[in-house]
Image (tube, rainbow, N blue to C red; front, top):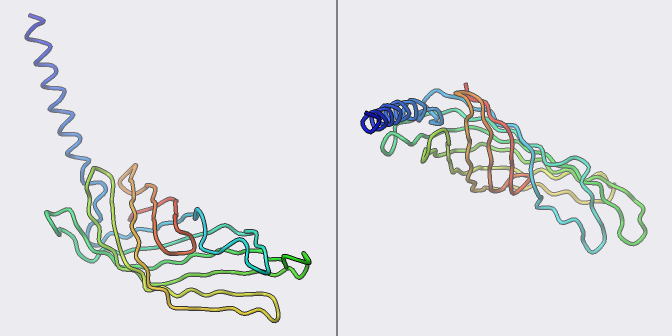
Length: 189
């Protein structure tokens, strides 16, 4: 009797478990009309901590924020979607003259720009994406005779959002911004 009961229970368990996995598989898909907000911090920086004349120390770590709106879904086997949005990030450094140690000054870097993203879901609850940003990098310099430069900075990036619930999760992005790697929280509504 046990010989037949255990396989039947196992089949029932696997069937129910399979249905529950299938029901949650749609959680990570970015659907038409969905909006998402990311808030995070950066790991690393593109600014050198030392030049020929100055040394720099970070006073405000890379802080990033982005938002996105899904404009089209059901692409490529129903797993892909397109989104548009924006990005903003800020980082602040304190600089000092390398030789005298004096003449402290601040260097701020603010990156902002619109973005276009393509999403594709490979596994349950994981929303993977790649995109392009048409960014503008604004550098501010507090020293009176210092030079600051701002420039247009188009960039590519890749990222992923993992959702713990239908709306809340974590994200990671790799690419140009105020930091090469950004980690944080995401909220979809």
